[in-house]
Image (cartoon, rainbow, N blue to C red; front, side):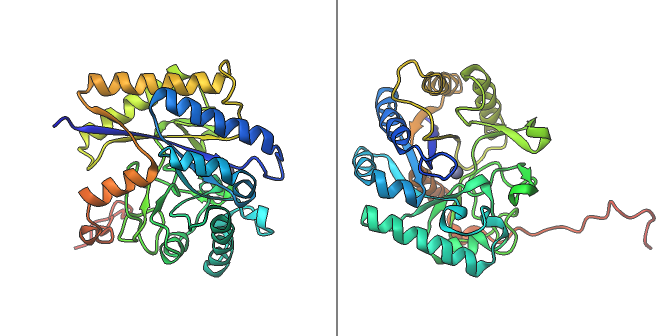
Length: 307
Ligand SMILES: [Zn+2]
């Protein structure tokens, strides 16, 4: 059987955010994305803040019935807390995430299993709290994004899906949560060097995204990663329902490029939700085999030889 490469896109849904407050645009965006996913035969994972899930639940139920995934996105400031999850204590994270889960469950009739914090903001308590609350997967890390001003510092964390370390968010370990970082090019720096170019639809055009996908798949093949995947992102703040919308055209261009690269590499193009990629990862890398990362003594800082 031909080897696969998964393709996924997550949509952070936050049209009711205080800075935006445009749920009508949010609705056009998610309906338009449903349409463009059908036309491109791809699948979306909509990660939704509580304010959006309350007003658009009926549409999310339709999207879910079409095979897309609906999970939780969180901007704690919308719930009267600090804006950044990564500055909160374990207790405060547990409180704010639980409250958001309850609001999600009220609208959708079930608890969310997928999670993504705003800005990729997290600290060393975050993964343990997510595991405890029953989340199974999500995008938390953004490898090489270093924005301390957003409590988002990831250094050289894994470029590929992983189980995170229990006490150090940057390391890999055995937390029962599959962290699914977005596809990034660590060498192309933006925003004053703090942010890697990623597969964010609205960041650049399709041609530019082609290079990021091409570089990523070459690395994954060379490093023989347990599973191959591309992970794109966008937000429900663009009018994806307009056929001439530039972001919509960019997404279609990304999918066409991804299919072309997959074919060149002899890989089967496999559209998937985040939940499906997490499940596939758990199958090829059983969590029981994932021990905490063992670190080795680094002696490069010594200026003389010990006897
Ligand atoms: Zn957000």
